[in-house]
Length: 320
View (cartoon, rainbow, N blue to C red):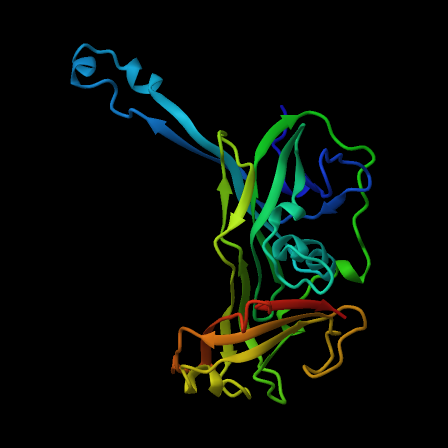
């Protein structure tokens, strides 16, 4: 009797650069938690056959023969642990820039291929782009990194890479916890403590198809950057979330490694910090702290970033 395929034994490889992209021992390897890539196919044509006469005569096959494939692409979610190394690799693909990662809209410059080994077969997705990326976590839990990936084409083969790339075991591979995250609102002297958070960057990409059923490139309808979650109601800066519905403020989100016995205001471990600077944030879902029994009062928030001018990005990311 053969055994089924176990998800924890599957392997995700990524290869960037220009085409043709060749997977090797130098490709990127990730410990994937969840992968949901699937075809996205649309059909066009005569869905009701060739009229009432055709149906009465029983020519039902004409109903399907009139239907044609309109578009075909591939999409799905990838979920990884949020580590400094994963952020360094995936944020440039989401923001379409390197260096300080000031956001631009040129996704084709950051296309990549993915190959996922599932049992005896390799699933290869070509010309992939990151449509959306989220950094999220809950109190006393890990922070995760989720990506919505779009791909232009797909193939399946029994071939695989040998030898496999090594998995990073340095400090860059240590996953962040929510207690590693600090938020500073409006330049307040103290950080706002979080009970949950979700930093979301949506590129709102759509496929461009000219004389083709598969995407030739992807274009953005404009980027949306939000920071949502719940904060403890007694924190400094929280009054800005519910006291003034029309406030706008820059927000700094820092994530770095703390030792388990460190106080919340301890210094981060060197070379483990990622800082997100979010411009002109506005709370678009103002809520007051409500009483829910004997539990602590919290303040839900949903901050949306803005662009101060056409030359300034709504988000910048630095690694320290």
